[in-house]
Image (cartoon, rainbow, N blue to C red; front, side, top):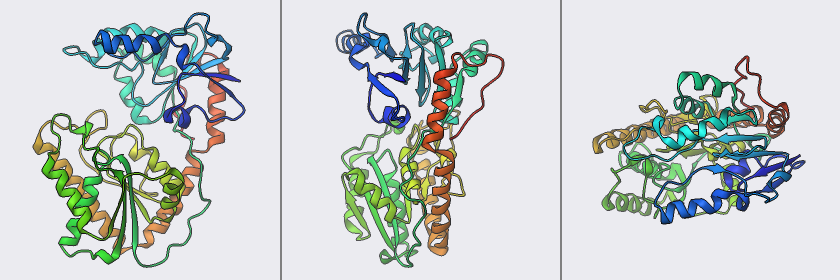
Length: 393
């Protein structure tokens, strides 16, 4: 089958480019909005539009079906879209409620057309956000076209090697070091050391992330100051248990996951959590925050979830410096208590590591994922009489 795509970046690689039997045709430069968006954003100072509309006579019709990510298609061709937050995706307009955004209202009818074969939410959290976009009558129609299918994940190990007693090996990996919770990891571990509840000799903590990436989108206008970030970086230098890498080649990172007892992702903001799947696929259970899809992909059997207050979109809502401080303290205290529990009962690491491999095998199998996509590609318009099942593969 010939599948038209509009990009071949990480989201497409993880959610669309998964079947070697398909021919994928990259239509990125055959999209009118590939040319229109730079004009809108640079010259007219208007928002980017997340739409695929084929350039006339560009050859886009060679594809049997289009599979987009976070985009709506304006075309007569059959199309499917996967999305991580909501669809149509529209950027905010000052003084206009999201549901009243003119661009949103303009694009909704294209989701309801018969040539839109299906909408694929990558998590239940995504579906929750999506359905709040629409009026009840429209929401019912959109829901009939929508399924939840979690992304596939290759297994890197078939079973977890028995861990050797001794040092607990922990790994944090997040390019945006501060958004992903790197500061909270450093605070939690250094506080345990300062309180003499742990010794440095008990831990080996690998930190992979860019310390220069200080902006945290979840903090909005309440960003951490220079003194805070400098303090975190000084703690990393002070304690021998920390080893920092600005970046790491993917193969080496997967090897590090295999050698780690537990992963760390107390992230402030996350649309999904692909690194959690990668850690689990290497037999490395993960300590995560509870935003968005993380509780879905990191159940208590396979990892640890730090519980903090969420808003209706299952995200942290930062409205003041005090609230940010309270959330930070919640993450730090959650990390500290979890790490102490692991030190007290290290056999949990083996149990949860084996459970993590099992959940990847059962919930993220690539062949089952491909079969579900093929079903959507081939079925035409989904049955309009009932909701399709919410599916994890």
